[in-house]
Structure formats: C-alpha cells, structure tokens
Length: 146
Image 1: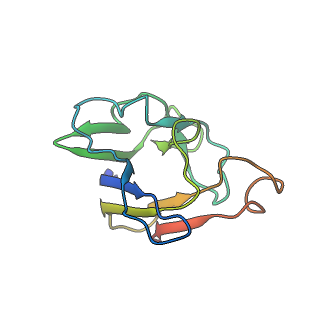
Image 2: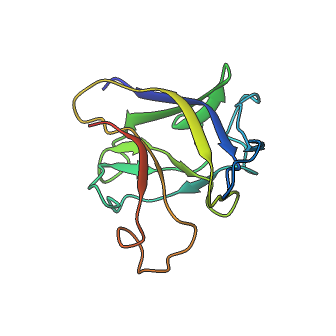
Image 3: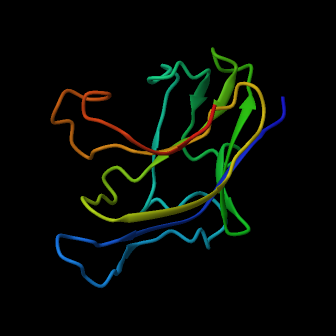
C-alpha cells in the first residue's frame, strides 16, 4: 500500500474580539524541529475503535513511522500493518489540553494524499463536552476530503 502523506505547514490564530482590533498572533507551529511533533503543542488520540467515521487504522503515539516532522513539515502517514487487528496504523494529533481559542482566524497550508480510501481532515472541536460529546458539541471542518 502506498503511504498516505499529509503535511501541515503553519497554523496561526489571531485575536479578533468584538470591535475591530489590530490582529496579533496567539499561537503558531512552524514545524522547525525534526523528529516527533512538539509535545508541548500536540497530543495523540490512540486506538482503533473507528471514532466517528469507521477508520480502519490503529492510531499510534510517538511512532515516527506514522507522525514526524521533517523538512519543516508535519508528515502523517498511514501504513499497512498486519500486527494490528484492522491492518493499518496512522496518527491523530490534537492541541487538546495544550492550546484552545474562542475567537480568531486560523490559517493552514496542507498537502493532501490522493487515493481510494484516504480521508484526510483538519477540524476543530470544543475543548469541553458541554452538550454530550461529539457530535452534539459541534465540529468545524477546516478541510475534509473523501
């Protein structure tokens, strides 16, 4: 199976509250350090329970085969893996518990994989589950490609 590669170059959030204000950078990720994603900015979802979309991979943690920074890009790859019940591994990275915003402007640059069965997505979820978890709490898709 061809590895699916996805890279995120920059995420910027600017504060825009109420009245017109001068925008200021609140958070960014430039992926400037090679190796695993910065653990002060990113956490992993782990497991193979299919989440909300019936994914066929086991999401790993700290496995450079599945998630790493190289050449200024975050690379997330899915690989065939017969040691896993569903036959594949990949990674899910989140800022949960590391960074959250109420208002702002978000800019993302990403290169997406092509191929049958891939489903790359960049989305935002609320930090707290006030309405009973997903999907009741809502979701904002920045990008989702089937």
